[in-house]
Amino acid sequence: MADETAAPAAPPQESRRETTAFVIGVAGWLVPGLGHALLKMWGRAAAFFLTVGMLVILGAGMRGNLFRSSGNDAFDSLGYLADLGTGTFYLVARSLETNGADVSHAGGDYGTRFLATAGVLNLLVALHAYEAARGRKA
Amino acid sequence: MNVEMGFKLSHFQSMLLFAVLISIAFGFLSRRRPMDRVKYIVWSLFLFLLIGVGIGWAMYPFSR
Image 1 (tube, chains in turn green, cyan):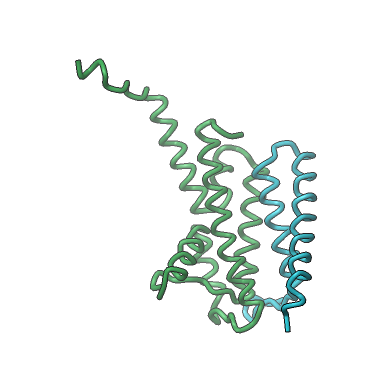
Image 2 (spheres, each protein chain N blue to C red):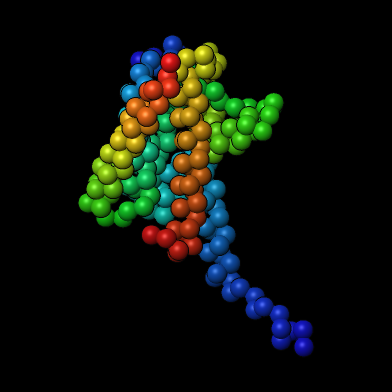
């Protein structure tokens, strides 16, 4: 009786596809554009690598605030999550920002937005690669 | 422009760079054919700048 009502197990091919899609999504998060490169979407891969990379370089160059895990409040924690969205580029931004953040000028404030946007944009890109790998988006 | 010293960009230059980069990313995310992408990028960039400058002017009476 219980066997009749149980949901049928996913076929092995479907399960494998899900795993591949997950790996592609994680790869896309770690290195912007890598998920699309693995799917042989070269134009998109190059575009996302360059746009996210430019946002990170500009944000760090403008001395934007790159949030750390030891945030004082919820906004710092949210900023940290957004910045982490850039994957390995977070480390690039930290290595570029040797003089630390300076948000006493408008440029630094813009830089903070550039860095956070780069992270959120990369998360969107990684999600797109994941969905494309699942065959739900082209 | 030197990364060590920090980029010095005006408000408009910062907004323009931001709008260009985001428009390109959105164009590649949401459209597949090259011509559709170009149209989307140009339209998105135009709206970014129009709304950005519009909001800037809307805030002008309260700036001092």
